[in-house]
Image 1 (spheres, rainbow, N blue to C red):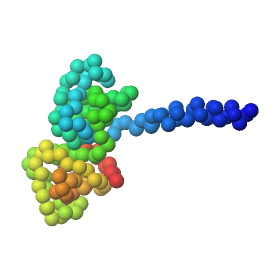
Image 2 (image 1 turned 180 degrees about the horizontal axis):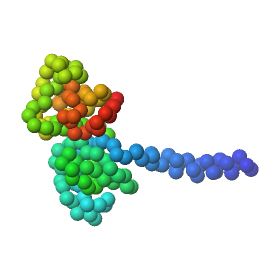
Image 3 (image 1 turned 60 degrees about the vertical axis):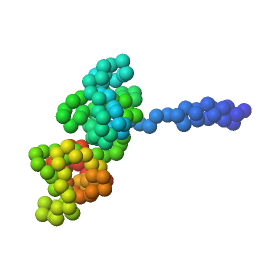
Image 4 (image 1 turned 45 degrees about the vertical axis):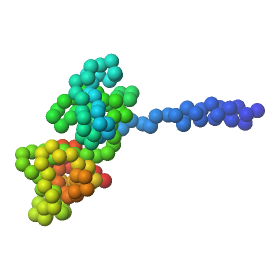
Length: 160
């Protein structure tokens, strides 16, 4: 009798466990826009007005708050609003900042050979970061960029 009740209890709880949501990440964290069009809204719901329409997949955003399928994010220009979580990806990307071109170097050191140059606003994938440098990939053109010239990584952050 006890075995039958235990089996019934397990059968009743297994579907709930199988569909349980994973625990939410600690904020803030970095993400990127995964959709070709993504709206930033004034609040966490479709009933809130859109304040920005992003038309460039891969742009990095900083996630500031998490609420049931919505993420409060900040973009490179400081705009803050809400996006649907499914419009975001955990893929790490960055944007070249500052004035003038930024060298992508062969190794993570100031005097290393320059292999490419990137203009401000160029978006690339961040593979890893350590000691003030990130391995940066712009459509197959790879090199190392100083973190102080990237928006999409925190100062001193280590990315593996």
